Image (cartoon, rainbow, N blue to C red):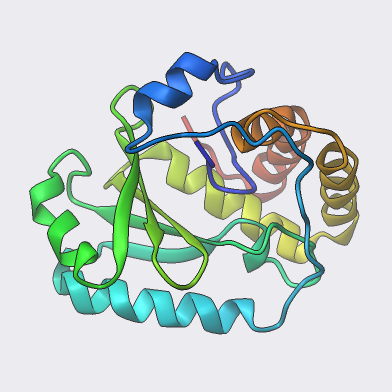
Length: 204
């Protein structure tokens, strides 16, 4: 599934069942059955985001309502899976004909379709390792991602807490990468609660 990292997922998603992973995946899905590689922070990650963002904007122009660098690669100093996470907001993520072909022409391809989770779509890039997460305008998950990112950028103690948790979990063997993401939910929710209190931001 490869939800955004940090995920900011809803609290009730404890561990994603294998049959659900297979159901929402476009194309064949093979179990990982290995540990997770976390790279030290790479100063080139923001530049990779800018290149990917340029392609998205070229493809969709005014249909791009928001496009942000999210996940651990967007937080200076934080180790991460070396995969750039982008969040794209369009008018209606269900309306794939309005954006999918144009993005495919820029080297992206659809990998995940989740009608039951915010109508989330995930596209991969064919050259730069990236996850392009597509949501509809007004989706609360986008706000959660941005609040989490911005909080970790400015709060070193929580950044260290999150990184330490990730490193411990990454050393374990995971059947699917999504199960690793699911296992981070507890610390993500703990930090998000502090972030919401600290910013006065409310996400329903």
